[in-house]
Length: 486
Image (cartoon, rainbow, N blue to C red; front, side, top):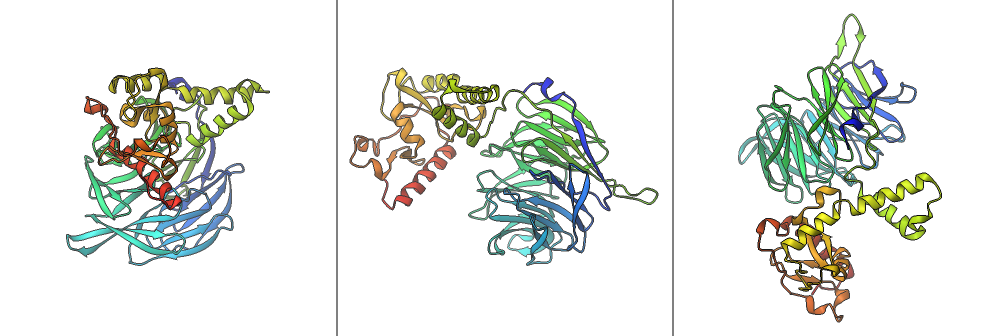
């Protein structure tokens, strides 16, 4: 993605007026609907006609947060009336109201699979560590509270789940961001560096980084280490909101009287949108639109002047760096089944070429680095025939950022296939090879318990978190076969 790609005109395609409060949420659905907060109401707009479709009116106080479920069938709203409500987006009817403790709710967020909802409140409760605010985790099917996270000193303003659904991030008025292990309910990291309140948190689509905004600008953190990687707008006293597009390439964040657009890959400022007092920002699920709601609220002379603006995001480059794996797999299957040179139209040809480019993008350099790190040998079989060795990703390819030596192993071609199919894995604690039941009694049985040969340079050694994730999937598949792994 180049600067010229995104310096094209960001066309404003909608201006939606008539809100009675700060517009704390503007999620967009794939079918061209936008939900916006207006006091205690949720307004549904048709973006094509720019007219109101439906108004939801069950809350009794200002709504401060909206979250759209991944399947776009449910909307969650959190309000100062101390309730969380779930709405059926097809019927526009209220599904249920969630409330256990009397907290003004300032944040709601769905998990990636849509099965959980996290909500953050403002009241303090007595704990063993003193007075702390609490985050609630709800089961969507049962509508029951299943876990609480306790640790912030002040109100929780923002929540976000990691793409794999295993980690929850929370931002608070205590100027800290916390990362929580969802299964244990325990904090993993406390991220400190903001000068005051945290306003928004979000994971990048690949899950490698967490972005936060608030006092002192926008900050990007390494999820695995908790270390600060990058900072934007540090000269700003406070950044109220931001959004990351679905490809993970574009960062849009609020600045004084506007929105800045940045390329997250090369940390380059690309564009500026003139918009007074942004208080919420959202990309559409397909990344084609950017919406922002303002904090102009009510004016006695002009009446309801709260404004939502929607821009069309310029088409960028030939292919995003982190083209979705599911899309890549689909295109690969088409290529294999139909033949690469059988494209009947220019559009089909372009799609096939795109998939081919993504497949090989960065692969040669990735393989070269792995071969150097491991001395040109497969660390499992000790095969030293380079033409038979392939670069295997431990965590599947999700863009060029996953082409890192610590996320790879130079494996003999047949071992690479077994590794990708999770018929073979590595114990992260011992670095020993384990095989699936299907391989017991085959020529691969001798690989069981063989120790992985590690590179001399520890900086290129396999990432333990990546190995753990691969091994977890391997064990899950073995469990489904109801046979022990060897």
